[in-house]
Image (cartoon, helix red, strand yellow):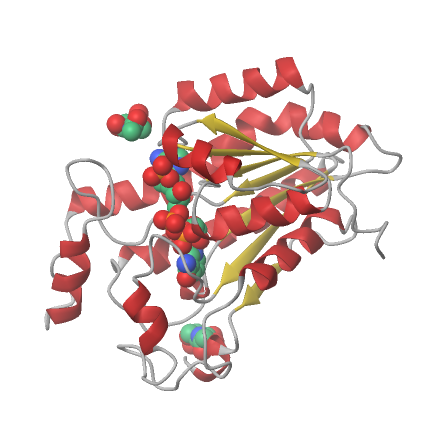
Length: 286
Ligand SMILES: NC(=O)c1ccc[n+]([C@@H]2O[C@H](COP(=O)([O-])OP(=O)(O)OC[C@H]3O[C@@H](n4cnc5c(N)ncnc54)[C@H](OP(=O)(O)O)[C@@H]3O)[C@@H](O)[C@H]2O)c1
Ligand SMILES: *[C@@H]1O[C@H](CO)[C@@H](O)[C@H](O)[C@H]1NC(C)=O
Ligand SMILES: *[C@@H]1O[C@H](CO)[C@@H](O)[C@H](O)[C@H]1NC(C)=O
């Protein structure tokens, strides 16, 4: 097994890999020998994250890339093509749940307003929905497009090899209760991403393109998106809108996220799966 899950010689890319779930996944890949590009809009955040990972057999390389900007994504693909000539693992992780402030980062005001609002249409805006779809649903499709030929080269770098696309969805995609303190659009963008995962996996499989596409639906994990108060509260309280507490009684750990992504990255026989890692929360909440 130690050999079976080794990523030695493989090149990965995790969008939004400098923080939260993306960074958990990048660290797991690097610990198992991969060279992992982490991308995001803030280069300082990426550089700090990369510098904090030491003593692993692989490596972490910061690469600034705004996934909603087509030219930026093409430039990222060109950069990796010039240096590595292939990509084995692509994790579409960059995503968003609430609203942006003027500076383009988390609008904490939105979460507070959403929590307090009686009216489900507040404080939603058309612009906010468009931004969420652009990042959570549309960008992953075009990122796969830009990296498709490198992913095919990654697959052919191993006998009977396949490369792996992992879309980070959310349990919000299958739960019908609304996720607390986020836009109503969030679960809709993630449900659309799951459908996109299956449509694309089928399309690749039908054309004998050796790229597998799977979706990973996290429950609650620590990140910039989830306020620390919420991580604490869920140990003892029901989250707003939910009917039963998380059976695990806690949020997920870095290792629990990392091992799941590692599995989807290496298992050449896993294709079109939509996998929840959520401590059972969607089991007990409709
Ligand atoms: N944490 C949870 O409990 C949870 C649960 C279910 C699903 N998820 C999903 O997990 C994924 C990661 O979220 P997270 O919770 O780890 O939150 P996070 O810490 O906010 O991570 C999001 C990352 O995406 C990057 N990003 C945002 N917009 C971008 C853009 N236009 N181009 C490139 N990168 C961009 C951000 O970096 P920059 O701002 O520097 O660009 C950031 O590093 C998301 O898809 C989210 O929906 C999270
Ligand atoms: C990311 O790209 C979008 C679309 O091109 C653009 O509107 C936005 O300003 C960019 N953000 C950053 C921080 O570059
Ligand atoms: C949400 O509703 C659909 C349709 O009734 C159902 O199939 C699904 O199981 C529900 N989700 C959960 C998590 O119970």
